[in-house]
Length: 299
Image 1: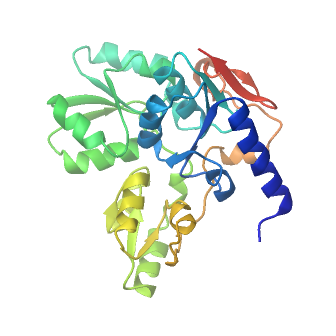
Image 2 (image 1 turned 45 degrees about the vertical axis):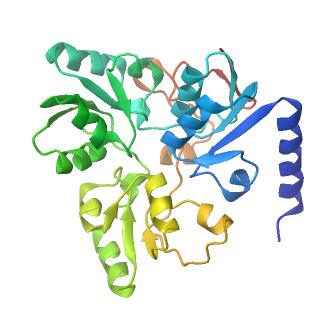
């Protein structure tokens, strides 16, 4: 049974959405209670596309900072609200504009492809952005034998495995997602596969190479959902709550649970503000706002 306080809060959120003509977009990683009040739930690519289609005056974006930035970029005439400025992506903060510009100067004719998990000021310096779902296709279509790519080198490894003739120049040298890096106990994964011989291990390309090599399939978050929705029994390291909310009763077994959107250091030091490269906060310059009030950006 749902906590009465949670139900009351959800009811208030629905009222506010109607009053302010707002749409609430939630990433797959959000808790079920948030997904239940969302108008749309999806991965980074799906949310970016949905943000362009909304007709509401305001977008409440329940995801990490760079996702809300993307919604700002795609909807310059709308108000974008980021409810919690502590929901940051440490990986996005690993790529500074200075590092990217230095790489561009060192390789002046090489195209720059950046993972969408990047701050707006870095995106402004690239030729094209990609997601984990389309990174291989984007780089393949560029037709270049050399690509400046960042910030996630594990995604770079995934791309290289599928496009071995393309040289990827990493920016930064070893960018990574601190959450997906927790999924690195290959022996534990193998043990689970032996224990559940009829199960498949699904892994996100932000996971470490060794974990990717152990997987039966390496898929984006949306790809995992679609794969599981086709009736495949699964044990994965990056699964959301949508299957359960839509009546899926199959068993899930995670190699290791991990939170997304806040670093381990921040979780243990809630009163400290983590600074990103070049003196920026981990949330970058846009969106802007106060942590206790959420972020409201009027474009």
